[in-house]
Image (cartoon, rainbow, N blue to C red; front, side, top):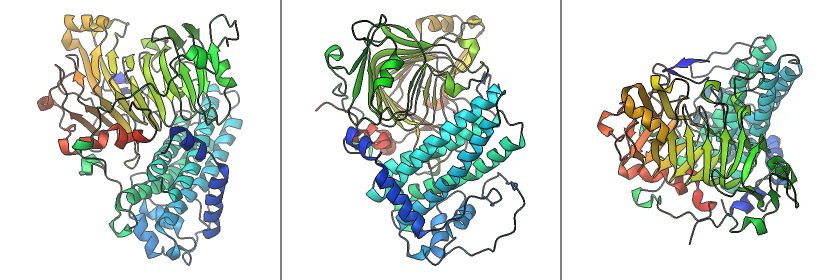
Amino acid sequence: MHQASAITKPHYPKPHSRWSLLFRVSMASLLSFCFLSLLFLLSLSPASPTEPTTNSRRRRPLAPSPSPKVVPAPAVVRQACKATRFPDSCASSLSKSPSRIPNLSTTDLILAAVSVSAQNLKTAQSMAQSVLHASSGNPNRSNAARNCVEHLGYSDRRLSRTAGALPRGRIKDARAWASAALLYQYDCFSALKYVNGTKQVDDAMWFLISLTDQTSNALSMLAAYERFGNNTAAWVPPQTERDGYWGDGPSAGGFGEGRAFSTDGFPSDPSSTSNAIVCKDGGNGCYRTVQEAVDAAPDHGAERFVIHIKEGVYQETVRVPFEKTNVVFVGDGMGKTVITGSLHAQMVGVSTYNTASVGVNGDGFMAKGLTFENTAGPDAHQAVAFRSDSDLSVLEEVEFLGHQDTLYAHSLRQFYKSCRVAGTVDFVFGNSASVFQDSLLLVRPRQLSPEKGETNAVTAQGRTDPAQATGFVFQNCVVNGTEEYMGLYRQKAAAHKNYLGRPWKEYSRTVLVRCQLEALIRPEGWLQWTGDVGLKTLFYGEFESTGAGANPGARVPWSNQIPVAHVGVYSVDSFIQGNEWIPVSS
């Protein structure tokens, strides 16, 4: 564990019709064509762990090798690479075939950068697999390597989809998937970091640093293309709100936060229209466990597979694999249908990623009317109730109960409506692009000597790269404490310190729009992680906060009050393209 501002959290990693989009992007023939065409055009060099970069990280060679002949990068490459954070490595990797590159289009150059990452990702996967094979008898390293292999597999799939989306003009999709691909590579590095005791692991980590640079380059070029189009002369490295760039979303008049969300995506009578039913006794055609019902769903399903989970407490660990798309959980109500587990990160061979009572990787996941819970308790530290890596996911009237790290909104685009999240430390965290609308965020007692007080942060958003299209947006939400917690708070308010969030990673981004903040929120509003890490690069913003905890004049100087002219950037439609896939009332 690592101490940080009195609370602890390790630096682990933390469209069309919705259904037709999810079906089309999985078509392997299109993706194969894109990559084969690209590889025909270019012969690209792999990422080298000795390439210079523009950041503070320095490389050391994996093994001695002869110095290659230096070929000056073509002007078109040098210009395009000005959009990246690592222009030297960008130019080096894209200039292998200088006679062909000047004839490529802007999108071809971006696809070439994606291909560089994809090629080197194969090497990283092989290295991670070797670490896994060599880790027998070491449960912590075995688990880290296994997670690493899993993460890199997801990275590969998201890069493939990025390459398929860009030629079709689906720039926001491409950027969302490339953002996730980079996250998964970073997560692999982070998993190995805590078990690094061999040269093999060390070599893999060095290679992963170089790989993340290459993926960052491709993502930065995508961001520049989305902003400036084919005018590469205008391309600049990725900028954020802290640089004065608010994105290209709608103006305040197009904020659209009041756009009604309907339950059109959920069956009105799940008992008669569901594809599978789960009940405690397992009789009358019911599945006895939720996992059995998930396993019965078709792979890569283009239609919704509705699972009605009847009232009851289901003590199990549930996983919705990547192949199980468009799975829908419908319960009998929050607190009535409960899926609960107790895994936590203090267990041998278990990391935060593995602790989720319910973990979802299949795209198009939906859930309504149930509770996800982790009962490990406050002394167990990281213990996730629900983790989502599901793109285009919708959760409505869902309750999440835990303590530290309750809701792991890990990656991709997620929408939460009328939900309730309760916890203590960083209880909404991850690096997804998530919008929470009309939801309740509740601080719970620590239970271990709660009268002595504590320091809590509601959120810990983990964006690692300024080009990642990620962040947390809370619209019309309420931040408060449970009744039990507020009783303790009133007895000794100064001892119970609560903040809206703290920067888990360097480019952390969290926004609150017209939220009600109760008295437990400190006047400063936001908390440092450790020292000044991220304070110059994060973006924490509020727009028209209300309540006793809303105090714009006393907020920390590195947070912002969002100008009305820019609040539209954080609408559901602009931030996660919700108008293309979230069911709404007419």
